[in-house]
Image (tube, rainbow, N blue to C red; front, side, top):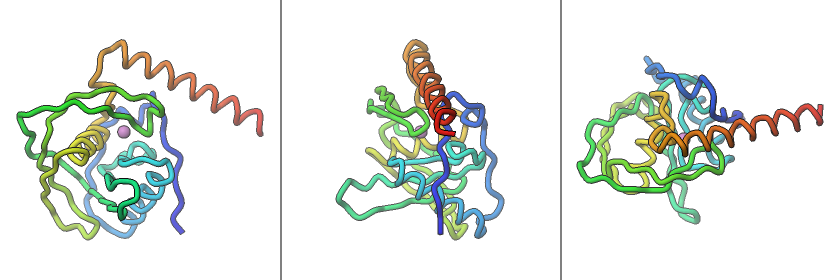
Length: 178
Ligand code: NI
C-alpha cells in the first residue's frame, strides 16, 4: 500500500535547497517515486519534485496526459536539461507548493533532457509544449528555484504573503480540531 505524503508549502527552507543526486536506483527509490505519483495524482497536479514532499534528492514525477486520456506517468531520477531551444514561449504556471497562484512565465519552448529511469537506465528525451514546460519547472525545484522566482518581485511577494496566510489558517484549523 503506497500512501500520499503531505506537500510542503512555500515559503520553506526545503524548497530553497539544491537537491542531492541519487547514487543507486533501488527499491527504496522506486517506492519513493510511487509515493510521489500517488501524492501528485491526489493533489491533483501534473508534476512533483522531491523537495515538495521534504525529500531533498533529485527525484521528479510528471504526468501531462490530458484529462480523459490514459495516464502517462514518468519517473525521473537525476534529470538534467542538456539543451534549451532559442525560441521562448510564455505559459501560465502554478505549483502544488504555492496553491491557487498562477503567473505567466517565459521559458525556452523546447528542451532535451537526460535522466535515469526506474531501472537505473540512462535515457534522453526531447520535449515541447506542456512536457517541456513541466520538465523545466520540476528541475528548477531540484535546484531550489520556484516559478515565482521567474516573475517580478512584487508578484513573488504577493504570492508569499498569500502562502503565509494560508499556512497560518491551516495551523489555526488544526489547533481547533485537536
Ligand atoms: Ni512546482
